[in-house]
Amino acid sequence: MSRRVRVRFLDIRPLRGSQPFRDLWIGTSVSQLGGQIAGVAVLAQVWDLTGSPVGTGAIGLATGLPMVLFGLLGGTLADAFDRRTVVRAATAGQLLAAAGLCAQALADNRSVLLLLALVAAGTSCSALGAPARRTLPVRLLPGDQVAAGLALTNVSFQAAMLAGPATAGLVIARWDLPAAYATQAAAMIVSMLASIRLPAIRPEGAGAAGGGRGPERGGWRIALRRPTLWGSMATDLSATLLAMPIALFPLVNEIRFGGNPQTLGLFLSAVAVGGIAAGLLLGTVTRWRRSGLVQLSAAGVWALALACFGLAGPLWLALGCLAVAGAADTVSVVTRSALVQWETPDAYRGRVSSVEHVIGVAGPELGNLRGGLLASLTSAPFSLVFGGLSAALAIAAVAAVNTPLRTYRTPPAAARPAVPEGADATAIAGQVS
Image 1 (tube, rainbow, N blue to C red):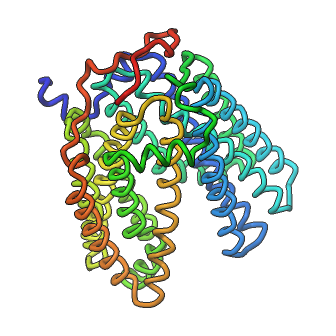
Image 2 (cartoon, rainbow, N blue to C red):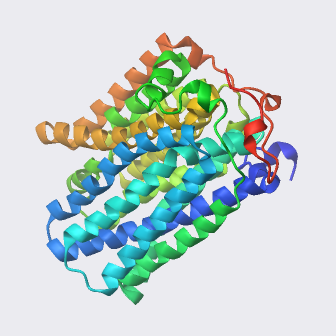
Image 3 (cartoon, helix red, strand yellow):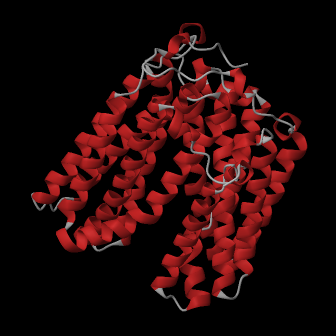
């Protein structure tokens, strides 16, 4: 296969060339799969205990609030301490929470409050470590491989979303809930072992940056002062807040496809399949240096594809629109993540990553709420079309007023060397300007 053909596919140089990144990727991928399996088990157990959509809705509260609150705290920790230590501590907490879930299932727990408390504890630990994890690829990889590393991470996430629920169904059907929770606990052990092998990665210039000032005086300030950062985050928020379609899937399915549950599953799978397909073909995209323009374009395609989904009549066309949206979302997420990491001084990366994390969590949830409310007042197709077109206009407005984002170029490969295997990252490269 020629080099020109190879670069069109997923760039796996980060896995070949960096053992620390390879360990990080394996640990993260396995924990994501375990989390998806446990998520289905929690949903099944809460439904068994309550038989109420209010009960299953409470799962969102038990996960959403900790993600936001502890995500911001995790950003401060990532800029004040060795990020490897933060990741290890957070992973250990997730392991304990997973063991607790397994124990309560074995004990035939009938308290939904205890179950949700364990879910909240695991989510809190995950949120504490998320900002630190986000900062690691840019410190572990050469500059020209950072986007490729983020693409690999995104592909593993999409694969977990696709395979996790199906695997959970098989495990629960054959061995019941304790086995599903035990699978997550085993996955967290693998993740813990992988984090132990990471090199020390202390924030660069943490003392000068004021590691203890908190996210409200660090991450938000940096994000708002840099056009590339606020523009990239505003693009993502516009795409999710105005065009998120998940909450409308059941209603669209009922109106147009007779409420067939298999069709509803196909909606979700189509988004994941599109995301995986795009991830496998990101070799070319991750080498493009115009990442700001790529993100803006991909976010616009996402919005327009969802507007088309709102108008689609045949099932094949609806699924095709969702697959295109999923592919565009993957490209947008990968390019945004790389841009945010490159444009943030390392001393602030944890806190800015926590801001990105909060936007990534709150945007889709609020977007689903917006879509549902508008659909209740009008119709699901109108909500999808209006939301998609509104998102496309908002993204175009960001592109029009934010020249630094529109013309942004990723720093060249020589701008930042990778952390040598086993080396302390403190001495590697200076602050990104």
